[in-house]
Amino acid sequence: MSPARKLTSSPEQPQPLRTVAQAVRGWVERLGEVWVEAQVIELNRRRNGYAFLTLRDLTEEVSVQASCPVAVLDIAGPLTVDTAVVARIRPRYWLGSGRLSYEVLELRPTGEGRLLAHLEQLKRMLQAEGLFDPVRKKPLPFLPGTIGLVTGAGTAAERDVLENARRRWPAVHFEVRHALVQGQHAAGEVMAALAELDADPAVEVIIIARGGGSVEDLLPFSDEGLIRAVAAARTPVVSAIGHEPDQPILDLVADLRASTPTDAAKRVVPDAAAEAERVAQARSRLTRAVERTVRLAGDQLAALRSRPVLQAPTATLDLHAERLVLLRDRARRAIEQRLTAERTGLTHARERIRAMSPQSTLERGYAILLDGDDVPVTAVAQVDEGDGLRARLADGTMVVQVVEVEGREGDWDV
Image 1 (cartoon, one colour):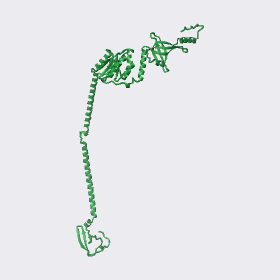
Image 2: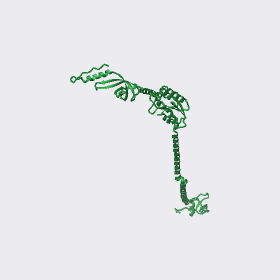
Image 3: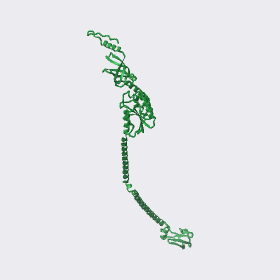
Image 4: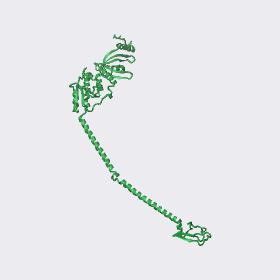
């Protein structure tokens, strides 16, 4: 970079401001693009396709504001605050405002940040394949007969899992397979132990455990081969890697993620004391429920027994019997009244008939004359003197002979 030409000026001959600004821009533009090493201490995304970063020197308290296209960030991978990066930047000086800015043209995470970016890209690829889908998660058995454990030999993680599991359920049985849990061969050994336990039909759940560590230490548990092996396992797998903040990719593909090895022991086997307490509580609730049901049934039975129909079952029949007696008496009276009325009517009719019958006439002193052919004689012209007639009276019949026949002169009443 050639030295900049010095501007001359004096109170009598000042330089125009634009000349100074143009000179500054020229000096800045001659710097050109440059690679710098820095740390991201602030990151803000904007909607116009740009993000704004605050970059700070790794050793000195020197920081600058910079803009970066979102596409550059996407290529670099996921960035977080405190990520160390190398960036290709270009300083720019704006004449209108006199503001100096920096534009990031390329960005690459370094050290741990680069490793995290690689892991994030692998995580996105596996997620796109559906390996983290919740529907793939297999449920854990309530009380597994045999538990497989993959961990380092003699590690605190092994001790935590075994001791806490046996403290909760003394009869628990483990099949332990030791493997390296750190270094370049760790992923392969863990995969081999996992395959051996998964092929054992007696093993009902498998725990993969190790203590905490740095991102590099836990890198084997984000190995793509191990992740795919866990996804393809027949047996449910529990991930118990590191401490609560640690989250290798194994945590995402496992059927259950435990925050620590101790937590894995608590999640895989039930607590015998707690289960016994729950059984006792369930029995107590069941006893109270049965007693309440019996008590309610007794109350209902007492209520039923207190009803009048059960206290005096024949009361209804007695009531109907009384009604039946009343109805029978009423029917009897109605029949007697009807018979009396009919007898009275019959008597009247008989009296009327008797009043109209010839016998009544005969009883009043009249007689019926019959000729020899038993034909009633109703006119004097029907007989001659000397004819024999029969006269029917009220109390009998007698034979008479016509002595003389006389015609009626005028009307006369009986």
